[in-house]
Amino acid sequence: MRFSDNFFDKIERKTKVGKQTILDLANKLQQSDLKNEETLREVIRELGEMTGKSVSKEKEDKIIEAVVTDKVPKDIDKYI
Image (cartoon, rainbow, N blue to C red):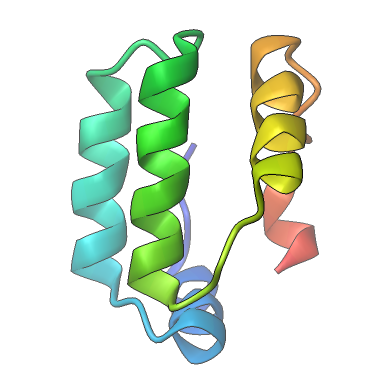
Protein backbone atom coordinates (compact mmCIF):
# COMPACT_ATOMS: atom_id res chain seq x y z
CA MET A 1 0.00 0.00 0.00
CA ARG A 2 1.37 3.41 -0.94
CA PHE A 3 0.50 6.52 1.02
CA SER A 4 0.56 10.05 -0.33
CA ASP A 5 2.46 12.94 1.19
CA ASN A 6 -0.95 14.32 2.14
CA PHE A 7 -1.52 11.24 4.32
CA PHE A 8 1.80 11.78 6.10
CA ASP A 9 1.07 15.50 6.50
CA LYS A 10 -2.22 14.69 8.23
CA ILE A 11 -0.49 12.30 10.61
CA GLU A 12 2.29 14.76 11.37
CA ARG A 13 -0.20 17.56 12.11
CA LYS A 14 -2.12 15.32 14.52
CA THR A 15 0.80 13.52 16.17
CA LYS A 16 3.92 15.67 15.60
CA VAL A 17 5.62 12.51 14.28
CA GLY A 18 7.49 13.03 11.02
CA LYS A 19 7.29 10.99 7.83
CA GLN A 20 10.75 9.44 8.23
CA THR A 21 9.97 8.29 11.78
CA ILE A 22 6.77 6.71 10.51
CA LEU A 23 8.60 4.99 7.65
CA ASP A 24 11.30 3.72 10.03
CA LEU A 25 8.63 2.28 12.31
CA ALA A 26 6.83 0.71 9.34
CA ASN A 27 10.07 -0.94 8.26
CA LYS A 28 10.54 -2.32 11.79
CA LEU A 29 6.97 -3.61 11.77
CA GLN A 30 7.46 -5.40 8.46
CA GLN A 31 10.31 -7.33 10.03
CA SER A 32 8.33 -8.20 13.18
CA ASP A 33 5.85 -10.91 14.07
CA LEU A 34 2.67 -8.90 14.57
CA LYS A 35 0.84 -11.91 15.94
CA ASN A 36 3.25 -11.95 18.89
CA GLU A 37 1.65 -10.20 21.85
CA GLU A 38 4.93 -8.96 23.37
CA THR A 39 6.00 -7.46 20.03
CA LEU A 40 2.66 -5.69 19.72
CA ARG A 41 2.89 -4.30 23.26
CA GLU A 42 6.37 -2.97 22.50
CA VAL A 43 5.13 -1.26 19.33
CA ILE A 44 2.09 0.23 21.10
CA ARG A 45 4.29 1.63 23.86
CA GLU A 46 6.75 3.03 21.32
CA LEU A 47 3.92 4.74 19.44
CA GLY A 48 2.57 6.15 22.69
CA GLU A 49 5.97 7.62 23.51
CA MET A 50 6.37 9.06 20.00
CA THR A 51 3.01 10.79 20.15
CA GLY A 52 3.06 11.72 23.83
CA LYS A 53 -0.12 9.72 24.41
CA SER A 54 -0.74 7.37 27.28
CA VAL A 55 -2.25 4.01 26.37
CA SER A 56 -4.09 2.24 29.17
CA LYS A 57 -3.68 -1.50 29.70
CA GLU A 58 -7.32 -1.96 28.68
CA LYS A 59 -6.85 -0.06 25.41
CA GLU A 60 -3.59 -1.91 24.75
CA ASP A 61 -5.44 -5.23 25.20
CA LYS A 62 -8.16 -4.13 22.75
CA ILE A 63 -5.60 -3.10 20.13
CA ILE A 64 -3.80 -6.43 20.48
CA GLU A 65 -7.07 -8.34 20.19
CA ALA A 66 -7.95 -6.45 16.99
CA VAL A 67 -4.55 -7.07 15.40
CA VAL A 68 -4.31 -10.74 16.36
CA THR A 69 -7.83 -11.50 15.10
CA ASP A 70 -7.35 -9.45 11.88
CA LYS A 71 -10.02 -6.90 12.76
CA VAL A 72 -7.93 -3.86 11.83
CA PRO A 73 -9.62 -1.76 9.11
CA LYS A 74 -7.90 -2.02 5.72
CA ASP A 75 -8.80 1.58 4.82
CA ILE A 76 -7.20 3.12 7.89
CA ASP A 77 -6.38 6.40 6.13
CA LYS A 78 -10.05 7.48 6.33
CA TYR A 79 -9.79 7.42 10.15
CA ILE A 80 -6.98 9.98 10.23
